Image (cartoon, rainbow, N blue to C red; front, side):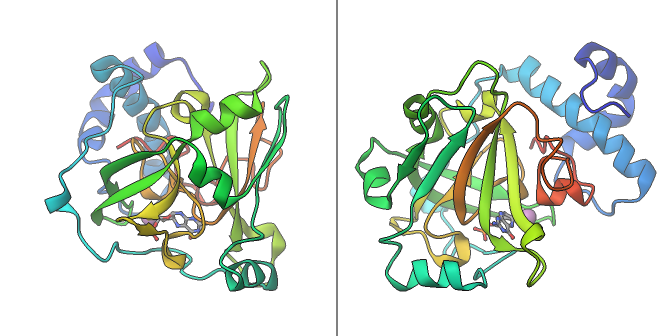
Length: 257
Ligand SMILES: Nc1nc2c(c(=O)[nH]1)N[C@H]1C(S)=C(S)[C@@H](COP(=O)(O)O)O[C@H]1N2
Ligand SMILES: [Mo]
């Protein structure tokens, strides 16, 4: 199956099969092959449907403070192994820097202090994990759009890749968690590089010191422990070539909710 077929064709081909999946995108079960193929159709259907129903700049729902559930349920890596991360953690991330590079005119190295000094956005949103649980939390951080505006992406740049500090298989540097989004999501106002959760510094189990929030997509897109933001034209040469750690295991790249 081609990865990026035209939307019109996909709408015709997969509407009947995909409509129920669209309504219950969080309920997926196993990754048997026909189901996985169907989801590869359904992801473009859900993207097309999101755009058609709500427009590409529609906001994800936001909630009231009373709806926050604490503590925020953590998942995946809870503490990155490895001396480099441990050293950064030991001094409260004073020596941590966010590298922004790739297809940009101005590569950046931003400290946490610099990020915290930028205009920030706070939002209360619901995190939906593909495993079937949700949790509402309040996130504060810098809109990714502001960081990109400083870095000045080149016209060729099409995707933003997030390189994380945690290895998914111990001792295998090739198994670093990573994720990618397109520029629509990158410049969306609710897409944050978040450094606070529920009014406090981001806990280690939730991705300290910095994690992505990309509110119109499922939990695995929300990269934790972000070390480097790279602008690319294509992610085909990166790791397994599917644009993310879980995508390389068969999950869809556009994980619209
Ligand atoms: N670096 C990294 N990011 C990650 C993961 C991970 O294991 N490592 N897990 C993903 C998954 S599946 C989910 S549901 C969310 C969980 O975020 P939380 O721990 O704050 O709940 O992070 C996502 N981002
Ligand atoms: Mo998840």
